[in-house]
Image (cartoon, rainbow, N blue to C red):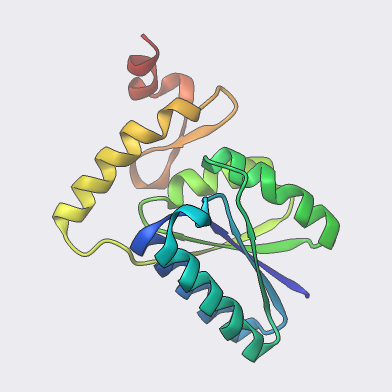
Length: 173
C-alpha cells in the first residue's frame, strides 16, 4: 500500500459521508490503505454495515480498509494513527473530514503528525439549521480536550493560540 487515507471517526450520516469520500479518493489513487480511526463502530450497527460494505468495495481498486477504534477525541485519533504512519514509513497521508470538523482536525493532525497531510473535505451540512446545530455541538463537545499546545480554528481558518481564545478562557473559569 503506497497511499494512506485517514478518516477521523464519526457516527451516523457524518461517518458514512466521510467513508464515501475516502472511497472516491481511493478509487483515484489505487493501492491505498483506508483507515477509519476513533469511533466505536460496534455501537453503531448501521455504520458497521457500511464499513463492511466499504471494505469489500475498496478491494475493487486494490485498496484495503481498516478500523482503529480505541480513541474518542480528535487528539486521540491523531495519536492512535501515528504508529501506523511510522510502521508504513509513509511521508504523505490524506485526511478525509467534513467542513465543520476541518479546522479542528487540521490544527491537531498537523501538530501531531510529522508527514505531509492533504485534506479532503466532504460536504455534510445541508442547511443553516444543520450549521447551527453542529456549531453548538462542536463548541460544547470539543473544548474539553484542548490543551495549551493545540491551536483552535478561528475566523476564516486563521488559527488562534488557545490562550487568546475567549471561549476557552470562559470554559476554564
